[in-house]
Image (cartoon, rainbow, N blue to C red):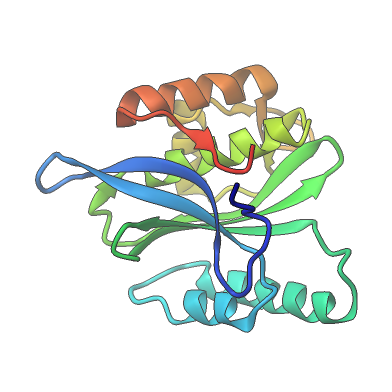
Length: 195
């Protein structure tokens, strides 16, 4: 039996998925990985990504903080970093989450700017949903969404807007709905590889 918790500098696969190539309309196999930042190569991989990424430098900064904390203590498990990559190793999406009470808080979520593939962000959120349910959390929250991303979160992913300090929230029931919707749209079963 393979143990996916041991890293040795490699990313940890958490979910297999598919994304759609907009140019030819075909689905492309992909994997969502967690970069645990136990090895500096995780940070270098994200830092060296080609293309234009709005949040890459912020994510790299937080990865460096996690890496530094882990050198001192092994208790830093709040921040998690995810990459969605095709089989040839091309990174199409990045996400950073943080545990916040009974919720998973999405700090940053970003697709590669060329927008060649469809369902990247939705697949990342569905995989995070699987992780959230596995950890016994009750919701996913987006506290500071960019203005242009709100329609994606609300219309495509089912987040609900609220008037309190958490502008967008995906309840446990809606997480399950997002997972099913993503599986239907991408013609694949999302399976948590760490379950």
